[in-house]
Length: 131
Image (cartoon, rainbow, N blue to C red; front, top):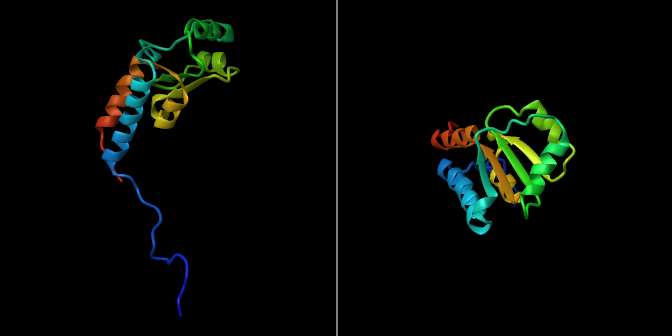
């Protein structure tokens, strides 16, 4: 008797090797920096905003010529004022550094990061994945 289909001992799930994960992340970053203009990656000391008004973020967004989608990456937890200022803008997304991935980088044409976020990402790339 021949059984068709998957057997119980077949494993369809696999995990990527640590170096594959790291190289995928950095290839995404290099793709973003190489094929999109270099000035689209901005690093600031911090992403603190003085007010929770959306108008403040819109004014800064309008100063960035040629920007259609903006990704703000902060190192620690996202500031409440920044959340409130960006929640009604469909073209601005805010992520903590721990939530940054290649897909979200490639989805946006401008990446704005805090210095703390860059340090946390570099630190995360140097620590091995323990599985």
